[in-house]
Image (cartoon, rainbow, N blue to C red; front, side):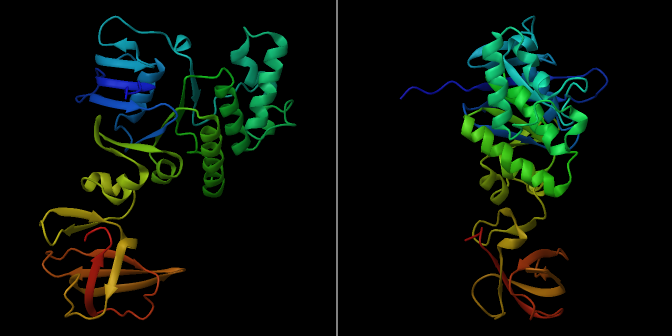
Length: 329
């Protein structure tokens, strides 16, 4: 079976800014498959936004190649296909809408060469797709934050881009609206079978919207995988902590270090049982539907584990028992 060409590919790409000691991007190789929603996650300054800008043509690589649909659009030499010729759609964190244009004019901005009748039909389709039908004449300041981001998405989708680039599109929204908009955008992109590259520092954004995730640190890829894999099976402490609290645990068979999630803990009241690891409870804190329990495991030089139990109200500080982990057999 013939292997499909990635929609977007970084081939050993490097980008070094003169004012920085270390490269912003250091030998990165990544493939974004067709119809995939690919999230780049990392700390501020990790290189994730530089990768997006390299894909967009807003930065040039010092080495390696950037390819779209198998075509090299930039390399470490003279080749640099300009952004407008790459057939990309961009959504920025502030939307970057034209404030003096209404919704219709914003969506139609990239369709200036289209036949007027076809253009009007395409604008209507895009506004309906993002749930803004009936708001054609509204200006950005007359829309809510979520509506402005949906308008920005409609504008980016209007020219039918090969690849959609989203740069922290939810960062300025409140938590409730953020969750709602994430779900809406994922549903839209999936329905349209639109390939997308998302840059975010927020773990919930990456896990909720993407089909594939890459964890970036200091310009290098530390781990790639499905949202479930990078969350459940982080390869190191940095990757683990990008997605919330994690406990350093030794695998009882291999003695290799693993990082486990608090909700994967299971309490065993019998301290002489043959499974799990002996612990002493340090603190118990009810948290609505769950109980947060901190324990001190034997043989871990004073380290503490954070556990979340659904039925831990009966547990008390000083109590001894054992903790086993779902992710470690």
